[in-house]
Image (cartoon, rainbow, N blue to C red; front, side):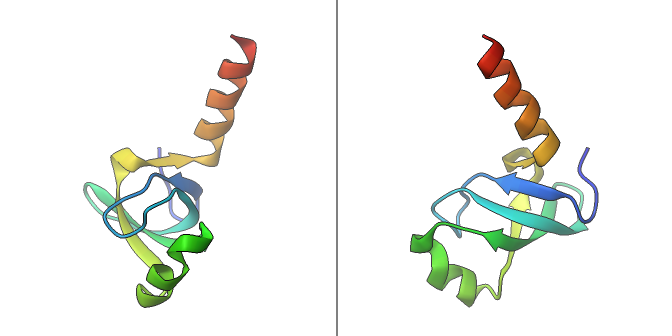
Length: 77
């Protein structure tokens, strides 16, 4: 479950072309507003244009805990 201030990994969306890491600022019904903390260098101008904030579908967001569990499962397989 996603909560405010969670650090999340987001898949590319219509605004950014590569995955990025951010902090959840606001939670809506099907989306979350994320402050971009780390991004691919090719997305730097778009991040600046968006003032560091992106609205992302919840289905394209994973918390750091979920990402760690997936990495562990892959390593065990």
